[in-house]
Amino acid sequence: MEKYSCMIVEDEALAAEGLEDYIKQIPFLELKSVCKDAIYAMDILQKSKIDVIFLDINMPRLKGLDFLRTLKNPPQVIITTAYRDYAVEGYELNVVDYLVKPINFNRFLMAVNKLRNQLPQEILFSSSTAVSTDRPFVFINVNKKRIKIHLDEILFIESKKEYISIVTKDKSYLTKFQIGEIEEQLAKNDFLRVHRSFIIARNRIDAFTAIEVEIGGQHIPIGRSYKELVLSQLGEPI
Image (cartoon, rainbow, N blue to C red; front, side, top):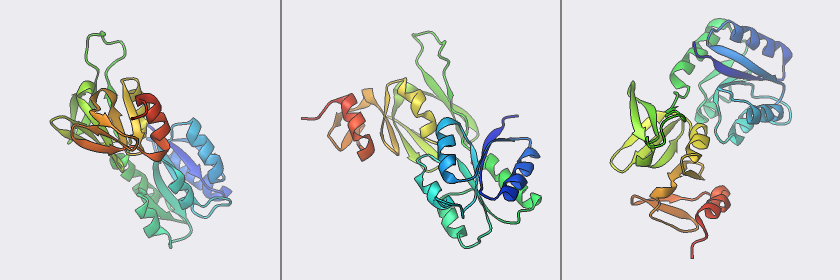
């Protein structure tokens, strides 16, 4: 059974111990780290792959929801708090569930069962041992089917919250995945991240300026934080 790696971000020791005990009782969850504050959690996220964060709101130095806003590609989040007042704000940040302390096990179980429907699905890349004449491809989940897409057919990929849209010349495919999790693999196949919401196929670029690239009639913005890297790869426009 596939297990989802978990992090607890909680400054109260008793509350953290309770969550840790609950997690140990769920076969598909695996606890990787317990953090007393959000600053420490940031460091862990840079070093480890975390699928789920159990996040308290009222913490020292950096509040839970403020911490969540700082994350470029956040894992799935289940809020665990003594405060009911932030529920709407939490759901606006696309949290999986909002648990109010004291949390009983049945309510915890209901929350984590939602993860199975919301966690990103695996994207399968063609094996690196494939014969060099083979066209690299991916298999993606679309409507309960695995669909094969050759990488040389992809124009660009757009992030749509917890989904990505993979756009080819003739069609687009929507699949549940986070764009940051495929960026490194695609970079090996001549793709380039140009914006927090867009990865493009470099060999499909028709034209570009300092602020956007044009692919297949689509104008895709170059994000300010990506501009220097993108132009170093493509060259400065005249």
